[in-house]
Image (cartoon, rainbow, N blue to C red; front, side, top):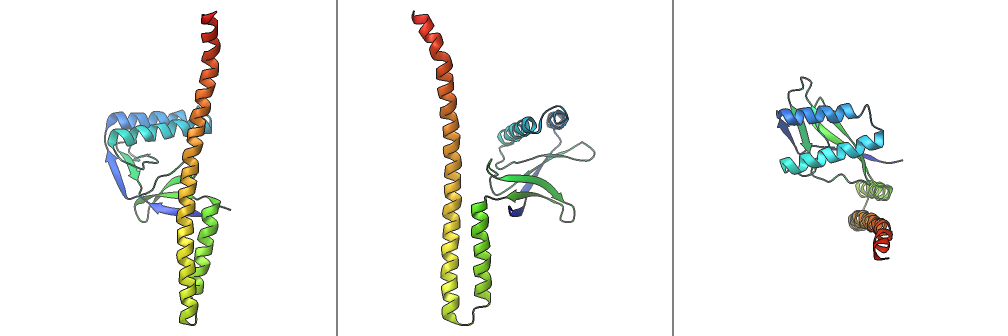
Length: 183
């Protein structure tokens, strides 16, 4: 079971650019003709292009207004990585976009421990017990930070491994051609 966290957008960039509106419509239409995996790749590439062209960090999605005259580009304080699963939503009561982020199970376990220790602090009877729980809570926060950093490093390492694997595959393809030319 994965814990979800709802994070609200730090800001929303609104654009009336016709080209962006048309591009978003095409990406949306492509969903009908592509597999889910293919569309996810296309959508992420589209968000990357928006991020680059508008120079806005942490863009994970875009939305078209009901009248199709504006594109909304919400941006967030954190990166959404490939290891995290997330969905983009809109809270009509608050009038804001949110990202519902599912976190890695390791972080979920640490968060559960943190919540338990916080409850222990609330119900601690004497100062010494409370002090012990606060120290434990500080240790859990440090553990969570270290685990998150480790998971991020692991993700970067996996990306490097994929690139090396691709380079090796390219070398295997080109080497027979080079050998044939030298004969």
